[in-house]
Amino acid sequence: MDLIYKNDYGATYRINNSQNPECEMQLVVDTVGLFMSRADLVYLLGIVQKSHGPCGCSECGGKCDKIWCKNPLVDICLKVDEPILHRMEDLIKGTQFALNMDATLKENNVTSKDS
Image 1 (tube, helix red, strand yellow):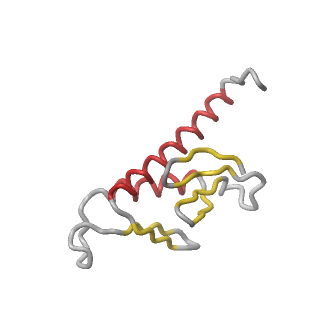
Image 2: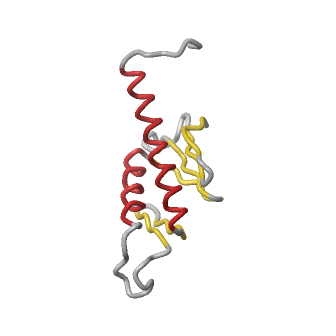
Image 3: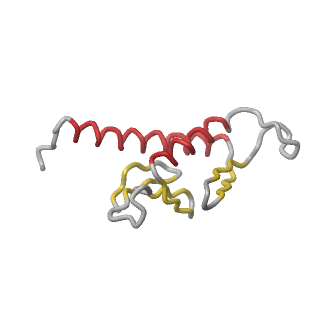
């Protein structure tokens, strides 16, 4: 696995030779590792960004302390607060930036001096 991006909340790693080619990365937060595709990352970012707003459920009193991410195989619930939401958003956006930068450099045949 190769590090893509990290901050003080977690890290994302590129998975080499993944059994599921769509799940090309692993997002690690606290002690949880999640195998994800780029589409999963976009979906999770949307959930994190919506979590900054008020919640309409009767249980939380207007500000929910959990985020839910659902897919066909597993439902994920993470307990969060405002600082964690900001670090999670940074982790996702930093990962997307690094992935897009790598693709842009490759597309334009730009290599480092060390290559």
